[in-house]
Length: 550
Image (tube, rainbow, N blue to C red; front, side, top):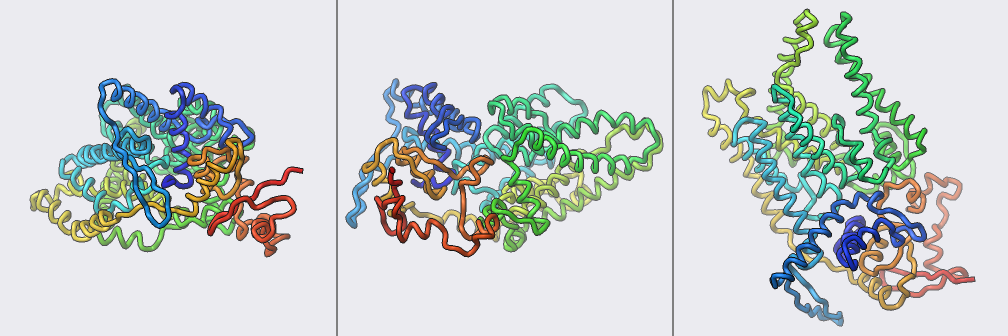
């Protein structure tokens, strides 16, 4: 029950595979699922990006069989007496418990990501002190960098570590004097592992080539081929093909950059619109509408439903203040100004060259330009959608590592020892950073939801196994996971066919203004469920209505 909303939905498929008679039988069950959108039979592996659950379930089954074979105990269980007339419950810990195994692997993956951040900061800055700065900045701003500690099963928990790897590989490729095939293969693999677990990965990537493989592995998920990402790749390919023709004519370098940038922007939007219309795909249309609503007065049911949640609203005003208190924002601004100065210097050197063969040569410090542009992109996304600050803050931590870069601050390090500068900055950061860490460590609690527990227990013991339920999206995920009953709707919102079945009375008025202000049907049924329904369960929070068969 602690895995609420989408978390419970994702974990339920892991549970299905580990409890199935065999691994292959479990995979077949989730690929021919009739429990999630009854009466439809859907391939949930295609729909919900469930490769993490498929892989973790295989690891769990191998782990249990291996431990059983060598006779090692994998979990410890005990009975908890709760008092107050509540029935005792069994509680288990250890990797032999499916939930503990599932969460432990996620935490291990994100722990390894911290080692990757250290390598990343070290490589980018050219100093191990840079790696130290990156990691400490991450911990000092931990609450702004990740939410894996609160929502382990969400897709970004599996996906984001591979984005960090991908950005490190891009940095290496941009810095290298020669392009190696192995680097490109590693980049492609990291992209695949980033995109497979998360339906929104396409909105983060812009310049990689792993889309086709993901399309195949997702069983022809058409949302990928009609995505902004796919359209962007096609337009970028076209721009690169056309560049030699521009170089043959006397086009100023700056004008060429402007033409390419505008072509990419308008070409991507136009191609995305055309492909969506041609293939009739609207699964990700709500994302485009959400972004449109941020700039204009446009609103519909989908955008209002998203912006009801704080994480999809604009970045809260307190966030930049928290960045400032840990000195992350001031340090990044200093680094950004230094990077921009270096880029402008390089661009000026390019623009002052008149010969065409000289213009073909790239300017130096391409990896710095990449990180500066990536920072700007993440800043825009983080301001528009608060949830996406989880990309911005870690990238700011990586950028902070450049405070140790001799390329940018060699003039300072000639006068002051780099270690003295870095440790002075870290000491100042730690004043608020240590307080933030203590706040995180002090968060201790336990999950309890007695009304929902009563509902789940009633469903398990008072209804038939084939009884079908519909209701609030978060509750339906718990019904499927804990009561093992078929459901009609669920919290995963990325399917255009399912969205019309989700509603909130106070914002549905936008779609149905003729009936605005009238009492919602659910409110009327709570007062009197007859003649079409009969009340079969009710407690302080939940009420279950059964359809009366005619």
